[in-house]
Length: 120
Image (cartoon, rainbow, N blue to C red; front, side, top):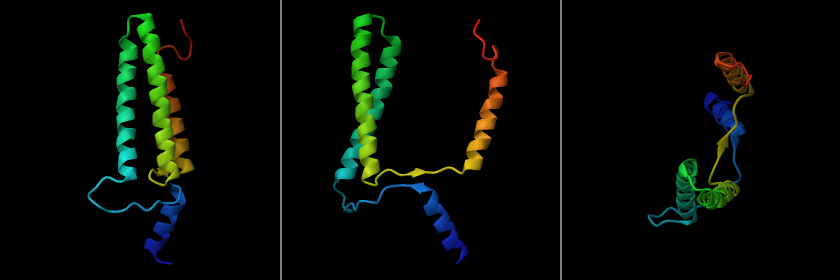
């Protein structure tokens, strides 16, 4: 087996992806393009609602915004799941050694907190 074949095999083992759905190649938007566009809009909307929630000074307005934010966040998650199921969104599995290194690094940051886990 050549080195490039081994790299491709290793790369395929770390990719978390459902079967790829065939998408026609044309200048016109297809189903994946539309769903991706809507997902991007939902992400933008949840960020905007989050800012509005932080700045809402009226309780009823806050509650209404929170309900809309929750619905928008749920729709964003549903769209992500749809794209993943159709094979349009893939994830890369991280090496367990790198995860362990990152965990140790971030646990080390806890020593820098001023209160060392106690609330005063």
